Amino acid sequence: MGQRSVPFFNYPHVYKQYEEGLLGVVRDVAQRGAYILQRDLEAFEHNLARFTGARFALGVANGTDAIWLALRAAGIGTGDEVIFASHTYVATAASIHFVGATPVPVDCRADHMIDPAAVATAITSRTRAIMPTQLNGRTADMDALQAIADEHGLLIIEDAAQGLGSRFRGRAAGTFGLAGTISFYPAKVLGSFGDGGAILTNDEPLYDALYAMRDHGRNRHGDVIGWGLNSRLDNMQAAILDYKLQFYGEEMTRRRAIAAYYQAHLGDLPQVQLPPAPDSDPRHFDVYQNYELEAERRDELKAFLRERGIGTLIQWGGKAVHQIEALGIHASLPYTEHMFTRCLMLPMNTSLSDDDLAYVCATIREFYT
Ligand SMILES: *Cc1c(COP(=O)(O)O)cnc(C)c1O
Image (cartoon, rainbow, N blue to C red; front, side, top):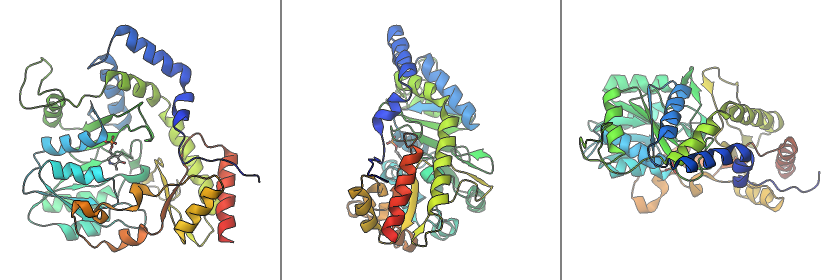
């Protein structure tokens, strides 16, 4: 097989794929001059709620705002501790920090999701909430987390930035706890043309509070009912997202097919540990936001693939949150630390052809033989 170029992610493709339809959406919104809090946002929120099964969905400016707004509306603040998996984006911990609470990192396990046993161990008298990250398009073991939360009277607030469409025992990521948050960063499975985020909740008082908080404290009648600020999801972004949401089923199907392909063509290699295959556990429906494996001689493999035109990425720049020195969070998390010497993400997006996938797999096999 000759050399190919397989970039890790293909940003122009997310536009090219639906170019005609998207241009129609932009033209329609611009012609109406409908930029802030207009019907396209309402339609998207409605459709997002329906898609996830949440009672309410609220568009906000980005996935990070979604997390800290949800924490703040839930009443979490100074003196509280929130437990999260250190294998997450720094935004998860930063959101906890910025509401005044203490982020308490814990380990993940072989599927790279938060380890419920580690959560149980980390609970103190100040713990208020568990914040699982629904990482890589997979939902954590929510039965185990809910049992711990019930036993200790803790809230669950999910960082489902990477989890849209993923399910655990039929229930969508973002709908388990008091609230769940979504990011529409362009490289997310549902990506906007810039920043965007959403909060999901079944709790009406929480929804009402967040509704006002994201728009200068104003309720539906325009009355200021408390402190708020500006974290609105742009109506134009909402219109684009609403258009793309109708193709989300195809997107998930293709990603699952790519994961099945990687499984079939790399699953026998003893040097790599692949993420769970699409149908390996009937409780999980994974949407493969990322395809994160663990590999022996990871850095050599990465360089070998790069020389052959294949882009890969080590998540979070190669560090779990507790390993970022500037943040001063100290912990010893053996699985996470070992994993970060081995983890690597392969290309996973709908711009990949079957020939691209064959080339990626053949090149990895070549490296190990
Ligand atoms: C992308 C992401 C976020 C933040 O989303 P933004 O929209 O970029 O603010 C938070 N948590 C996780 C796990 C993410 O992957």
